[in-house]
Length: 281
Ligand SMILES: C[S@@+](CC[C@H](N)C(=O)[O-])C[C@H]1O[C@@H](n2cnc3c(N)ncnc32)[C@H](O)[C@@H]1O
Image 1 (cartoon, rainbow, N blue to C red):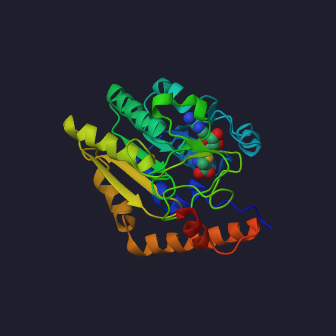
Image 2 (image 1 turned 90 degrees about the vertical axis):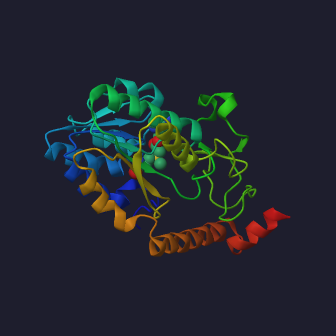
């Protein structure tokens, strides 16, 4: 059976690739490579435009390391994003899919904005995990890397189910040792979409307005871009048909319900809606 990976950004290639094309993106930076599924898509675009892909990931999988060894044009920076962004120069587009929590994403966006101003490059950022489960709940690959004031109480073993703000012990969507989840969904400084909301509100207060579109599929794709870029109209025409699309949102809910049912069967339980009700008691 083929490997089943239900969260790669490469699923969005039909949106991201044309958007990068119309923006003429040459220098591309990816945060979070994992197996390298999206990296391969991005490297091909960078090559076609005579540019370069830089992938920032402190702990990618062996599959990525094996692949990157065959692509001398691709640069792997093996550090945390917040230690690496400032060192990137003249970046045309950023793909953000590293640690999915408020502190990391909010500061990634602030640093990307600083790079954009420094280098005179209008912002074009594709952010993953802007929908459930990370929209309003922090996940942590390495909780000890997040300053204590910004780290929510979390758990490595309990899982998330849609519509329930707590965690359910031993079932639901969980990291199986890869990541921990905040005990509660919602509230200030919690989750990827909250980080984007806070970034956009602060930028607006400083007189800078960005466009933001959300594709509600595969855990959610956010596209944040400068409204005054020469390519902004062309990017908007590509992403707007998908923005907040009700059918796509419904299909994602259906996908998640099916996936969580499979997880429950693997865990030896019935259906996940019972888990939500059990957690409510
Ligand atoms: C969800 S996976 C990325 C998947 C990949 N973008 C794709 O679409 O196929 C997240 C990756 O981010 C990396 N990561 C975690 N924290 C990070 C950080 N602070 N900076 C950069 N990468 C990070 C992890 O090692 C992991 O490989």
